Length: 446
Image 1 (tube, rainbow, N blue to C red):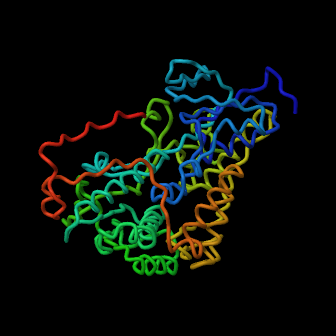
Image 2 (image 1 turned 90 degrees about the vertical axis):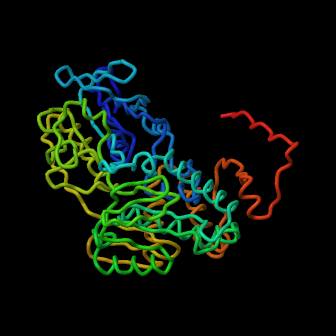
Image 3 (image 1 turned 180 degrees about the vertical axis):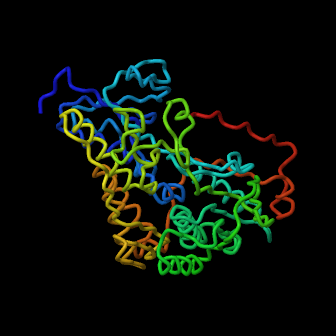
């Protein structure tokens, strides 16, 4: 359909699952679409844990947002933050103090980590909700491994604590165990196998509580087979630099604490003058329009519908598409339709040839069959052929036969670890010459 200068202007905030689904639904329509996102790329969050554990490159799970214009000319991409919304005049203010008028607004900017006010969590735990956070975990992992390798002893090693027993926590813990068992033991002979521990801490008494009992039991057996410890029935009361204190008084030593439980809207949403509901999410009707805000829609994780849909990829994709359809209906003078969510099921991978899938609430898969189903869904969920090919290659070389026996993880910049004088003396590595000065550090080129 030819475009006109008077075509309605739709602003979509957020380039995640929901935002991109909404943008794509406007393809061929006589509308002007502006996609507003603070980053230049979309992140495929379900595979971030693979980046965090050295299985994939960061670029494998990200897509250049401006690439959307290659197949959709009615899209403009702007990289900035949404600061405030003038609902009466249908105008938004960006963080750089520029203003943008809109006819319709779709809020799809997702959520961020919720630490629930836990003391020390923000300072000492590693969240994993963005590409930069996943890379930070990966780099911290190898720094700690190098430190452990240079300070051998009966109590030295690496302890990883994963907070949260949902799908993300299980996948993270399974990936760490897979990396330890296949890739790191031969690479770090200085670290005893039992000195690299992976523990899941879950407040409830079960992991993956949203899955059927049979799948939960299978998951526990596979985690235990991979020597992943489970500490159930106690939450985290405090996160320390060297461990976590649980609500039952237990203290677990931790060199790397991964926070994989709880999300909340970004703080800037507080300034947008929107009704909020459970979980501080934006309240919308079944047509996905924000209560009391005509022409403003909220979709994906940031929104709470009357049916309280889960904060997962499929509800985000379907809600983004339906919001776009409802905007086109308003433009054409047609009635809007309610979102009819189709639950395709959920799945989680535990490790090589071990996964679970609950499909349509009727079919339950485990083992290799579920793993192949998980692989297909996640590869096809990526945007762009290059990302699909590189991710498939990365996962096959990590889990496939015979590559899994000699995993070579992807690492970043890890600084040289030099043992202290005391460590050298205690391990018999000799003393540094008193006449030789320590060379100055090279200046950073970053």
